[in-house]
Amino acid sequence: VAVFSLEMSREQLATRLLSSEALVENNRLKTGSLRETDWEKIAGAATILNKVDIRIDDNPMLSVADMNAKCRRLDDLGLVVIDYLQLMTSAGGKGYAGENRQQVVSDISRASEKRDDKRPMLSDLRESGAIEQDADIVLFLYRDDYYNEDSEKHNIAECIVAKNRHGETGKVELRWMPEYTQFS
Image 1 (cartoon, rainbow, N blue to C red):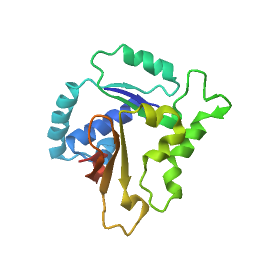
Image 2 (image 1 turned 60 degrees about the vertical axis):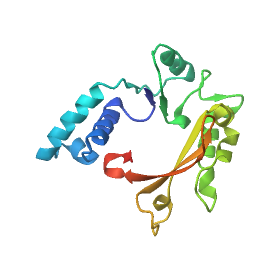
Image 3 (image 1 turned 90 degrees about the horizontal axis):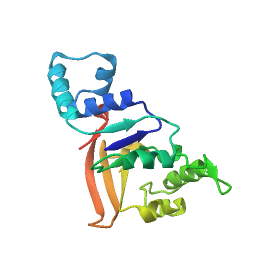
C-alpha cells in the first residue's frame, strides 16, 4: 500500500494506524496516558503492522508525476491512498488551463452540502474531469449524525458503493469508532 499524505505527517498516520489496530484510544496513545492493558494490545498491533508493507510519503509538495514514478517502483502495489485530493498538484503546478484545480475539486467535494440529502453521489464527481470516469470503484462515506444532531443513527456510517466495474453497487452500514479513527 502506498499512502501519500499531503496533510498529516507519517508519525501522525503511524499513531493512528497503531491506535486503530490495537483498539487503544488515539488520545491516550498520543498523550502517553496508557493503561496497563494497553501495552499488550500495542505490542500485538506493532507486530502485525510490522509485517504489513505500507509505504507512507508525507511530502506535501509531490506532484502527480512524482507519485506515479514512486508507485511504479513498488512491486505488488495493491492500493494507492492520497490524502487528500484537493491538495494534489499537477505536473505543471497548482493551476493549469486557466483553472485553479484545487478550487475546482474543492467545489466538487462541497456539492453535497448544498442539497437537503447530504449523501454524496456520482454526479458530484462529474465536473472533476476523469476522476469518476477513470475509477474502477467509487466509495462514499456518509454519517447522518455528522449533519443532524438528532439522528437516531449515532456513530453509524453508510459506505455507499456508487460505482463498481467488477461487482455490485449498494450500501453497507458501518460502525464509526471515533476514538480509534476506525470503521467496522
